[in-house]
Length: 426
Image 1 (cartoon, rainbow, N blue to C red):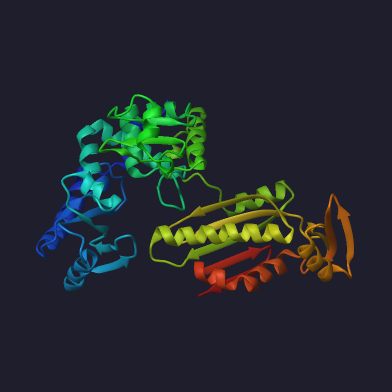
Image 2 (cartoon, helix red, strand yellow):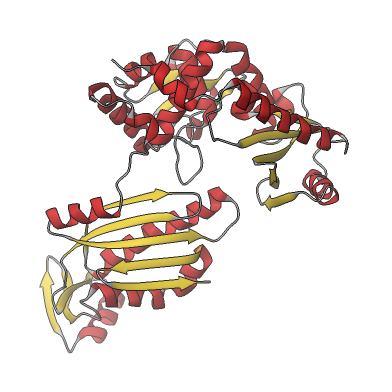
């Protein structure tokens, strides 16, 4: 049996820690109010579900209209000489460092009805108030456990580079099942499509299909927003993250060491993946990539896009991808590509067009007429000498051939193949 109280004693802030943090929040909010801004506390600090050493404070700034609201906020931050970063988005928002806390300031419209929202973030105060209305002290702790679990199994976060479960989605799932353990037991048996409708807006899936667009219900799980019956809170959840949540819930219930799921990220390090490559008799490429943006979502999406492109380019050259892994920290994507063979044959067979596609056939024939040509099932093929048969040369070819595409995505790229290294900084 796992002692959840023991885990909570390690992750739940003490009353003294809470006092200290909320005093700083109130102090910062007083600065904002003195400049005619109206702050609204959001996220886990509003709900008292935050975890020790998590000092990112979601703060919404309420405005009557959305004219130049980001510029208004920035002028206040400049005037108060605060340490901040402006981040591009559908509405620009800000990260402000103040007395050891990081405040994420998001300007939104102050609305009384969800129909008045012009941006998804305008709905945030409704979400905060709804969740708070459903929580007691025990439920707050249960949410702490579920959030930490989903973070450590890498399914937490609705960002486009994750496509997992948002904080709000995790809270609604927990509220639906009542406790952490009951949630895990239910996730164990999930299969598409899971439907969670806390306010019982719909009796049947057919009703949901009539009221929500195809894009909103294509995810394997549908969580009807209790504050907006036409919104699926889990619309961005991928089948991959949905499946990982099921898999690790099953592993958790079978595991003798359940505590590790709360204190360790579930991923493999460099040495472990290198051992796997040796075990499977394949080769490994290690990459460290930093995307080019100060918006974390865009930055990591660009890094992931380049990682996927490199896999594709390597495969197109002729190397086979055996497996791959990638993980994120605050600044970088760490990627591993396991591939084979170590060296390609000197020659490859290049596929051409159908013989009766005369224009394409003539072009292919003229280009390859001095090589061995083969006819198979109506198509022409050429036996051609490869430009490169070595992975290091292949990577050099990729970097030179796709340098403009790489430059648009990243500001740092490090690649290690065996003892050879390539490092690019922009």
